[in-house]
Image (cartoon, rainbow, N blue to C red; front, side, top):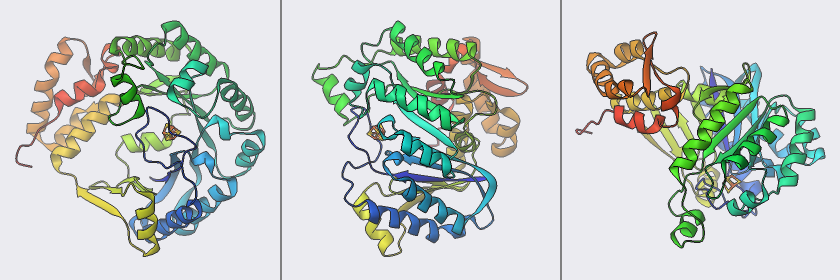
Length: 378
Ligand code: SF4
């Protein structure tokens, strides 16, 4: 089973923390949609032996598109690829785009999962992040969306400067009050060259505090467990049957084609990434060229990726798979490197699988980098 990711590179305004690829100028939207459809046609050969199980509209803000425009892209997927009978089709959507009319129209389209970018229900947080919606819109969109869709995910950000534990608890409680079966929640990270980084440098916003983020993460784990949402990945929590199929496939190393500017692709051996420039992307596709760079992953790259994603998920890192796919040296190296983390009770081996403990979950990325193989000859 494989997936198709569609990057819609438009946003109404720039959130202060964001380093994704997007443009706030929508003048070239039609040309962009034509280019995305063209890319779907040009790349269909890559999936001639694959069946698409998930289609994911990410961005950017895909909900700036009309339902007809979204339907047009889905039609292109169906016209060029084999698709399972009931694919998971997700649309990332922002609350300010989700009027009742829009939600109703989306519910009649093939979209069957909404991932709503709430981030916080508090006005001061939303303003600090420069989100395009306000608290009232966030709540209203969820009230309506839960009426039309059963498969909904809410995005929340924690560790915001000035966010108390209590405010974070209230945010989680509000999200859960809508009865959604899935929550994605990330610690605020300060990416270089963002407005947030600049504000922190100038002292306008307080720096992000790792201890606050860690406390918020523990609150998140506690509340998700208490409310029956499994922590199936460091940042993703879902009721059984509502894990994101798209993301799960990605973490399990399944193939996917990413179309649109800046989108990434993976075929099990190679990773590709499209140019992150809207004008150049559109121009290349107008000439039937794929503006993509490709790298063949080395054995070391594949090992490192597996360790990284494995430690973030409940599926962990299978030691048997490490041995069979990468050989005895990698297996030995992994166990050697893991030893100190096992002693510190950050990692544990269960059923021949290396897993992060509750205590280690928040530190999964740092622990993984300690287990990486560094190949100096590459
Ligand atoms: S809406 Fe999403 S993609 Fe757009 S600027 Fe904000 S965080 Fe970035």
